Image 1 (tube, rainbow, N blue to C red):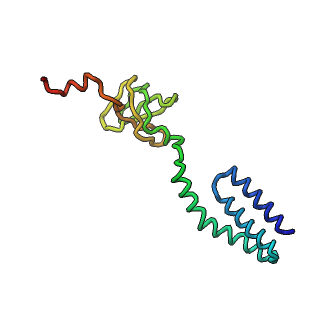
Image 2: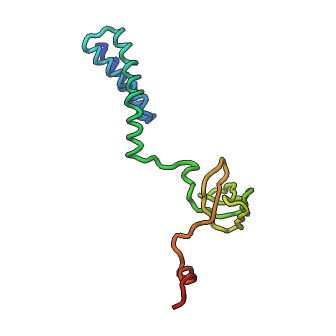
Image 3: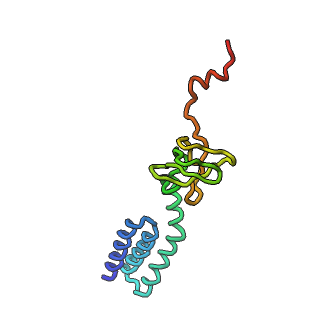
Length: 159
């Protein structure tokens, strides 16, 4: 009958794992299930209380890193917070130099600096976020997606 307590503990840990998604509580649940099996086979409570943390530790050390690596390879995690802003376009709202300035990025006003020393961007200029340094966006010229027809003919030799 003691095995039911171990199964109940494993279920509680499994539900808690669904909320945390860290795969740590799942390993503890595995230890509880090992103790439940030992209890069902007639092992003493002392053996059960030693087996549960030993199995959990083996799962945390041996299985969890492999699972995390596999999950990250199959399901790439989306960029969030500042990392999600890199590569986005922004509009200069106060002159941006390599010392400072302001841009409107993703609907918010950010402090900004030019990535190129000596480069200045006037208000209204469109820039691209190269990286985020603390609370400051480091920006550079917005790269055109496709050259215009005028740009294509400027460098062409006359026929």
